[in-house]
Image (cartoon, rainbow, N blue to C red; front, side, top):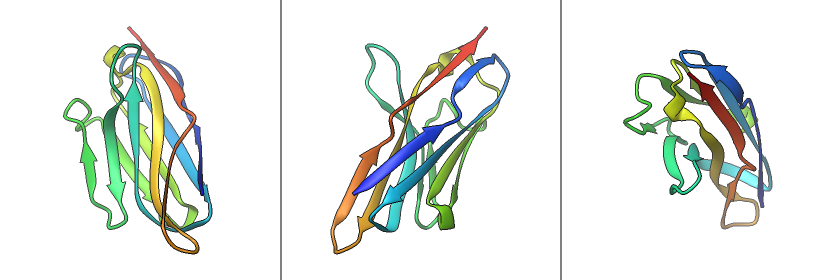
Length: 120
């Protein structure tokens, strides 16, 4: 069982910055990957950034150079630093985690979602 709690969303002017946080808890033995997805009404949820246990990262082309994903392994926490925000970044952002859990097997979870609104 994995549980995710997100924080850090809000309203910001274009060009501003926000930092999202996601803390994973539960019967976690080790985390395989954590990441951030975003979704707007009528659109498919899309990957924004992800980071593996080995530190490899992936970013959507639309956010490369502006967003940075990092992980605090000891805390099972992932961060998304969002700089130079654009109105197009407005969405609900969801944290994702896939982890090996105690007693074997894997668990996956989505965060509750946090609204990011960028005004022009």
